[in-house]
Length: 136
Length: 98
Image 1 (cartoon, helix red, strand yellow):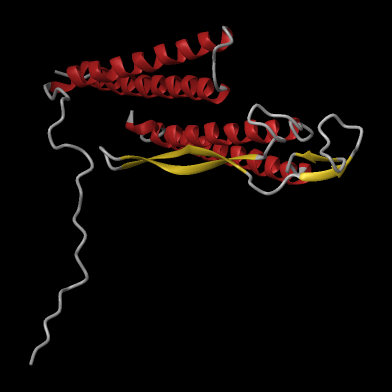
Image 2 (tube, each protein chain N blue to C red; image 1 turned 135 degrees about the vertical axis):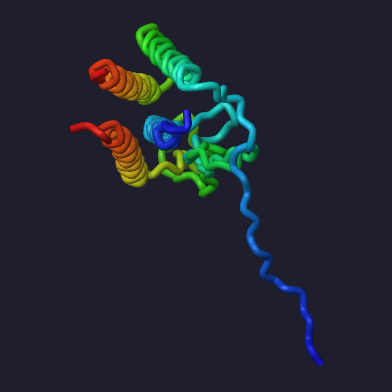
């Protein structure tokens, strides 16, 4: 229904932010993972968002996740000769995940989620105000 | 000599966002109301399904369930308001002194 469009747009924003939080949680959980299926240490992942446009109806429909990109910065090398994944020189390649940065991203995602909820509630209160037309 | 360059400013064309003919039946209030009611019913069923999926642990997002329930509630309130107006109009006529 056209009257609920603002709500659907907010819904897409909520989904996108939740997906971002999923990735951040995965980054933090794998902050010490030295092995992956592709080989090498885990690489930090982040989501790429884009505006969602319905080309047929030429309308804007919110946001969508277009890609998940891997951070290509080099891994963190820590001298740990006893580690099973240490190289010949005794260095272990740890993921390029900076937990502090992930925490900041997490706060951003949480606040963005809250902002979407606020705009959704604004849409709802506008609708309810419209229902009051002619009353009293 | 008058220089005539190509005009770089092309006026924007207003695009119609919706097709001109719509399939909405236009024969009277009853049909319109019936259409609206079926829309409301659809939203209620969607909210029901969303709540069921949540209970069964299949819901992907909680907010989608909440939004579906909220939309169903708002559509219901709109319907009730329209109904109140109709009843009001009927009572106004029935009170008419002849």
